[in-house]
Image 1 (cartoon, rainbow, N blue to C red):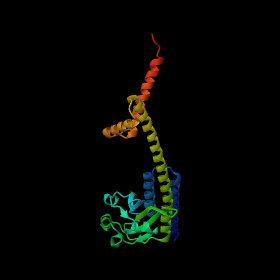
Image 2 (image 1 turned 30 degrees about the vertical axis):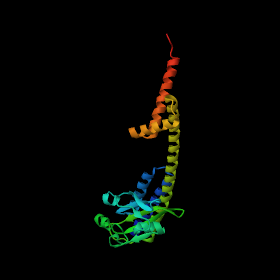
Image 3 (image 1 turned 135 degrees about the horizontal axis):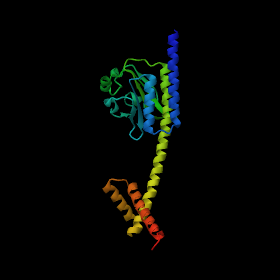
Length: 250
């Protein structure tokens, strides 16, 4: 009995540690891909699962896409997207409710039974990832043997999913903010380069823009890179003139 209690206490500590680790991800500032990998690794470790995977919802296509897994299975990692409402994960995302399956190989709702057989997947717990009631994805936990997930296990998985959802939401908001900032910086650089080209070549701004655009396509470089090259050339030219003007003449 003492051994059982010690084992249970060890599992409890492991679960608390995992929850704390995922909670810390909320303000970690990690890039999204790194964050997703950490979530599936922590889930696999705490649940001792064969495969742990995280699927995010593509809201435009209404599809769930596998974005992270600790599995090395190419077949699983490249499995097709799942439509909202279809399959186990699709139903979990649509209804925002946990679904457990004792054996995915024998459940007609599971869409990839051939992959499950090939990879030796058996029981599944699929948990929704939601932020303020809005579904953003699904966290899947597979075992290699038949396993009836207990309420404490599902409570831990749900807590992990809730923490992970918040961290993912923050990372995506941060990514969108950085993308918007990058886009604004690029526009400013292109505008400046366009003005430089327009003045130096004595052409209209619209023609200067088309030249930058054409050079971008011909060189297979971004318009920002072309703009930066134009601005750099202008700066070098101005510095050369300044150096020549300040250079002592014999």
